[in-house]
Image (tube, rainbow, N blue to C red; front, top):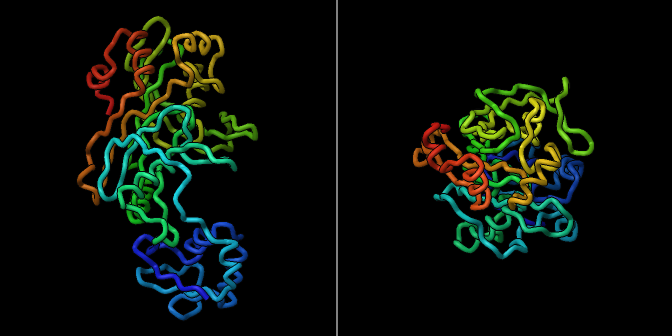
Length: 327
């Protein structure tokens, strides 16, 4: 038998969701079966899957230790040993800059360097997170960037802030602004409101039975057949910006999946080895986080990407963002 005491970072979860995290490798049928058979009790009583856990609650697992070890989540320190580029942090949240060619989360069977493990290692080093003392919680991001998209990731240091940030992303109280360069001479701001669906080969395109995707585009500068755009991501779908632009006949330079190969080759010679897409600003409208509410947190792209934009359009990138009031 094993006892689990619910901590502040476990409180507020449903019983079945807590157990699904705790027994990461177990099927849901295992969890529901053992709840039904009273092999898992909360405060000495049979628990329902939908019951909400409170701080200090006691869960008892009347299961063999080998069974627990077989299915239990590994909360040990990650394999990574590097720290992230921190833009801002307080006791609840952390904003980091993700570079191009880094995963947000590790999604392969073999380990790959990723932003989440870097963040976790940083918080362990600072003493703000101890995996050995946690039953289910691990710091997490509430937004995601593709490997070849750079920019700001929003991390939650505790369960309360994770739930609060996720809730406010759904309510659209957290705004995310991207910058991109496209082939095409765009004169006016525009929006794309379409349904997008992902195919089996991970390509996203317009489809009647897809999910609604709304994106707003603001023209910052155009010159010589190219346009620098600020993008307000209203919904958050896979490849939303890239696919929406393609549907309008515009292609992000450097984009190998949705872009134009001849254009990509031209800019590759200028040192651009990824799509030109960068999440440069996040803005929060949060009643319970006054310290960050109403503020713009800004991160310009890499020196290489900044130079390409400034040379192509003959501008200072920071000045043009302030001048256009894109936030």
